[in-house]
Length: 91
Image (cartoon, rainbow, N blue to C red; front, side):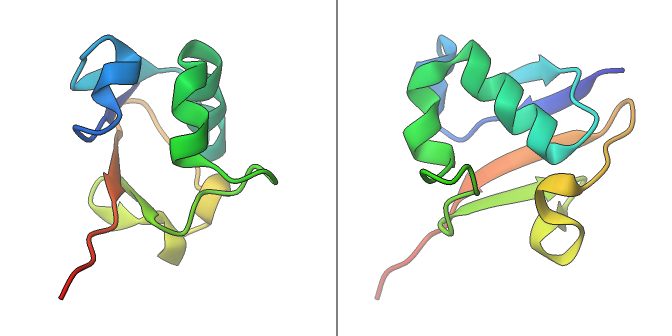
């Protein structure tokens, strides 16, 4: 199984500048763990000390926000596209 993980500009330096990486994870949580294992410097930008996604990190599976699915337990299938986006705030 392969999932395409699209990385935002702020995470690309940790992944050798790649815009996307492939993952074999079967859930969103598996993909996050795989990213951190492959690119340890990415960890503080993705998860908190308890291993939960930072609240300012938005993750989408095929344009569906995982907060409205099963969060890190959201099941992935071959060919899914997972996008990681930082929250945007401002005034």
